[in-house]
Amino acid sequence: MTPGKTKYVLDTNLYVFAARDPRWKGAVREFMDRHMPWMYLHSTVAGELLAGALTAKLERDTQRNLIQPFESVGRVITPSEGAWKRSGLAIARLVREGKLSPGGVPRSFFNDCLIAASARDEGVTVVTHNEKDFDLIGSVMAVDFVSPWPEEAIAS
Image 1 (tube, rainbow, N blue to C red):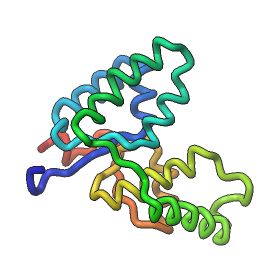
Image 2: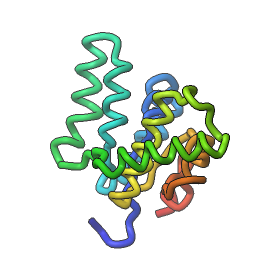
Image 3: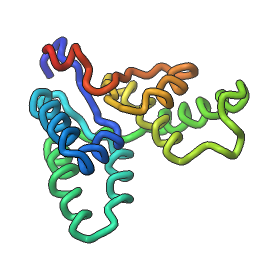
């Protein structure tokens, strides 16, 4: 890695937006092209994308175009045991503080906690359009995230 370059992982929502909107697709492609040497895929994001691949063709395309390129260069982040535990503890703390409803924690929020914890472990910044959840996570656990498209990343 080049010193001083920020490493990034895209949250699932950006891939979904790109699949649905040509403007987002162009923005995601441009960002990834510009930062490819510093881009990573999170295994939780891969899982969410595959769970949403409702046809065999979409599953093959997701594997070939989004997952395998990162796997082939060893740039997939997978949560450690510690990240799993920190994610659970973060949710418990948010419930105790009344910021989340007990029993009302969506799976996607737990996934965001996993992404945040393990990206932090790896020194990777999460790019997400889900600032609300990541701000909430950040209130109880250190997390590096930016909204799309981070100005400092576009300018570099």
